[in-house]
Length: 367
Image (cartoon, rainbow, N blue to C red):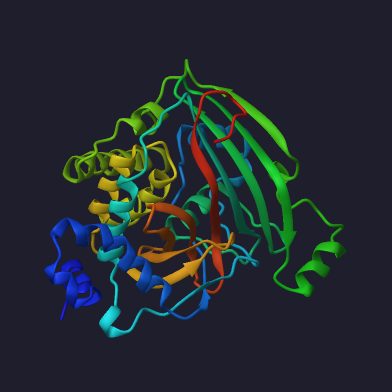
């Protein structure tokens, strides 16, 4: 028997609530979700990879200027394990749709702020070397571009700060707190025997990059993802879905034209991957709420239980299927995306932990 959000929440709430007014119960919906998330016991959980992580305009443009060597690389971490709990008992079982609708309500409560720059600080851990796994599309692109894996397998972790401007002037600070670890002592010994070669030069040192894209002619897909465009996305689920279906069509055409390789996956898989970028981007609280409601109607999203990210923050773990499984840790009370990872659950290829984000009015300001 399929469970709906209404039937699930009906099972959660005390019998006495039937006598309360509808608005009184609505105020307790988030508490019910939190109670169920907190009631489970802990067990080991993994992390996630981004589908392609265009982030804002900066990643599509600055990545070519700063990290061309990283194009097509899919990544993972050795110190990214966290914890999650099994799904609640039958009488308290949640599903992905219920969690997404609760997240929509939480996101809608955030104050609507604005500024000149959208700031993000994120910690990324990825796998480099021959042991990394690629999606079919990434494999095709790597083969076409003649990319070769470094001879040593290692995990590279760095922090990045980004200021994405409404005027298309951006700043990034990369290579912060860089850390390299190895999956085994044998791999580290191999690396030392080779003279400890640099595995990823572009992230080896902390450096600041300033970009001015204000006079650059953008493609249609790039115009969709400027800070100004993202801040104006629709705040109604059906209108937002229409806009994102247009993105899906445009990006598929661009992929075919540029690489000769179509995007993998259908719209439901695409929009779950795109949600990773939107949830940490400069969309309004109303748009974020609409995004969660839209995701609640998409097939293929599953609830894996509760989890903690690498900062110790607790949330609901949602997974989306595609060529590679993507997992998100979301705080339903606030609608905040805490972390994402992808690939094998025990050995994810990429982990992104979102430390902070928000609007600021000056470069180097932080929310």
